[in-house]
Image (cartoon, rainbow, N blue to C red; front, side, top):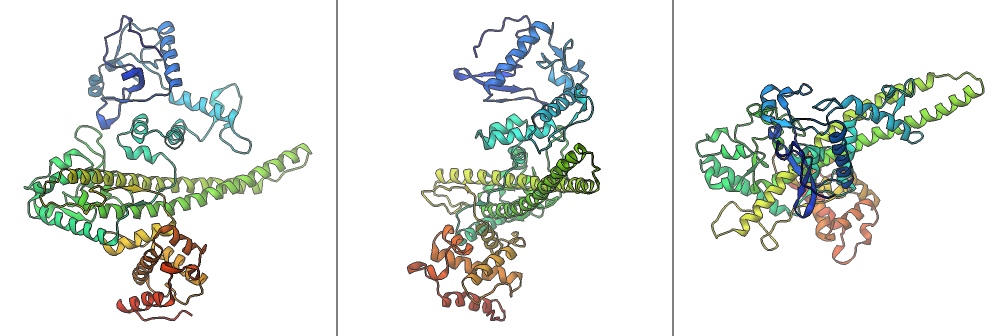
Length: 550
């Protein structure tokens, strides 16, 4: 790609409107003239572009200059194929549209054209046995090709490929997608969620909770200006509105942050639709009062423990939802296989002149439609949870950065700081964990934070522990206890395992049956007396009757 001075008569009539943008050292990027409401249509740049795309865009521009020239930049006020109102079009000024229709100055409507052409391309490229598109009628007419894979769904797959296969930075993918936040770009990536976790001990989590209470006390005393520099939010406006004049009763505190409007502004906590109007806060794991995606929500390093707890909880829910979605998709694949077998039987029957009964296949096709409907509903719920995970992770990363910044600039003044180890640096870790580890994180947090819920974790963990106990021919059983008792005793049992085995890998090996308790020697050894001390003494301490499960 060679850069040359633009000698066109229209050069200079617009400002930075070229799609291909030049960066230092002749690197290539993209410039988007966007109509996204989140940035009032101001446009945005991306410091990356595939070279093949740059080549074909240059070819398109040359073709337009030669065969479809224009004599002026077109004013947006004269555009008719747009949903922008008059004020918005006036603010956008003029453009030389690269994708203008032949004989016109403005772009055409590409949705229908692209949909038909995509369906035809999928029809002739689909693997045998997998239906990507269908032909209904004459193959010479593009409108006869139909596919349930729309251009938007292909756009989703492309974003997934960029992130998972090409390893592009998330920020770049977010800009390519044209979205207002990193959350939505991650929302489009259909991958299994990883457990959000930070290697905090139970004591550190309790210490973090105390810091949150300290911050709450200062804010309720009208001293919010003292801790304002240690707070973050999803919007700058939320922080700017915080001052000592706000009544203490308007603050609604939770383990993971607070709402300065006592939870009464959820109806306008979403993204902007114009300069003064906002959508409601997107619903999610916490329902309509989904604080982590609300522009009014405020948090900070003092609330990081609660945020980590909430992130792990949502991640577990997403894990369960992904399993549900995968089960439905497995059912879809099974029905498709049966339909394909019947298609072959029908072909042979017609070839041999025999009658083929379509009743059974019609029932399978009805079941397939039902399963796909259920699959779509499950996928949408999974998408919502993934959005919440990314929102939570974004806030945690901001808290992590702010906490480290405060530690670097610490001047001896006692502030609402975190307990920071490893040379005054916090390390935020997002990693894939075992199912038992994820369950245990959620259960441990439920004993520390009032906002945490272990409803989705207690029973699955109890089943895993009881299975391990049965494999080792022990008498102790958690399923005799109620939910609260299972939580408390299960946490004690897990802490014993970690204390002796020192790593989650060893704990997971024991829980899965790859090693047995009798195989543990030396410092790792666990005796029946150790187990009795947990199951019996701990049960008695919370007022339970000991039941012999042997």
